[in-house]
View 1: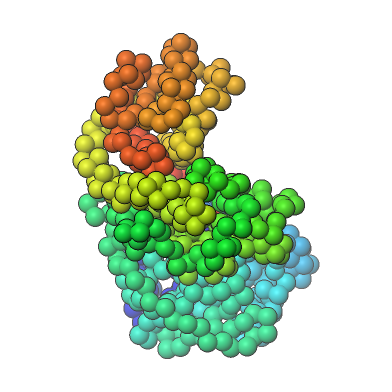
View 2: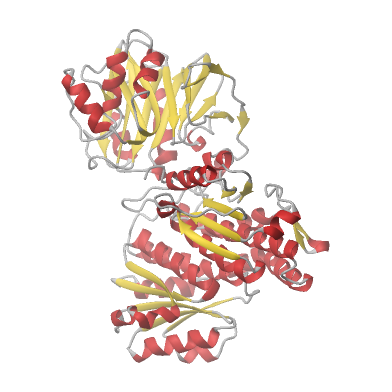
Length: 610
């Protein structure tokens, strides 16, 4: 959730840490801070608010240091204030710590430390860590951190510095990401590689239970269980700095909406055998007999990824003719789920670090189940914890409200469904060809569509002052309606709800009046007439209807207040296309309201805590 940067080396450390925090601000922006080792002292700077506030605070400060740590916060324990900002220190400012995660037993640890004379100043759980490490420190910082962490319950990615070690940073992870960046006479510890890609492409993805010790000239990694030194594989970052720049767009979110033709294409590139109308996914290592024997295919996710999972449930039952479920990871892990012998689970996560989803994977494995991952980040915790899976190849997504990652997930789930359906012979080859042809054409279709969206801007301006909204869809378009509502909530702060269109009359219809905009996905399919009936029910109550409709649909024009036409595609590909105008509606409404589209309040990109 929070962003962490640690640097040891000879460059301008202040500039490196500030730039790193700016790259990581999508992970949290309630407050920011940094600490340096200088002249056997810890110099500490903290500021409530976004990184730019911290930057202004230290602009005129001269920093002469070769080791520093920095943090941008998404608040969990304690409201955003200067005092609650990271880094946190012990009472004597001997040790400073930045932390991503939650210390579950911090109350017990705090009492233990207070009884020993330690004095606390913040409301955070993190503050117990520097006090704990100081309690165990006897000249060896790594040993002190190791001994302290043996008492800690919870999740953490941490970086630690000590005033007596001017070039040393100790890092450790359990449940929160931490990456070691390797440079020439400089090294880094960060929660996301985007913070350091300007300086190095060589990284080590630390695993749960790993510790790292870095100086400008060396790096070492250890197992926390036994403190044995271990060799870790050095990997190379393949993407460029341009991937995390705005490239002339006003916001990252708009840039990422416009990147969807490319990301969808990348999601199916090399995975379709056109002349055989088949799908090949190297990460799905299942024999044909295993696929045919599957009795249930389950999807587990959170947030936007959960909406993609509902799409997956519908597709699996539609194409593969196999029982399918879609579950919130946060609910799955806290009940007693039944895992059957012939079950298969897919966990869906953009970041690959979602805490609840990782816990669900562990539970499935404990119950003897098989689980594959659908994620965007190579080397992520979910990619390493699962039995296989498929990368979405959406690239870096900086905007907190997910756009291109979502449509990439839909694309990959469609590929999986076609693969399984062809293996089980539940769809004919002609049908598979029609789906594949439509999918291959989809990027070009979206590119053309994005060239003429002025009408969407006008509709956004018309409804930007609304207090509430309904999003309605049926069948495969129901999860698209859920996602449309979520996007509006996330970035415009307009209360919005997504429903199956037929469920409207079972409660939500009571909300409809002449001030209530209802966004209805009404593209042509087998239940189109049912959706038309739902639209008439809304209009009978004086509701405002904005319809997403198939190009050339004349019937619907007279029934609605506003109309957004989308190109016609195959029935199972159409929902991916229908997502685009709903993303744009949310973006332009939030933009018209003057809101910070890329950094909506209270949210962060990657949820690495419960």
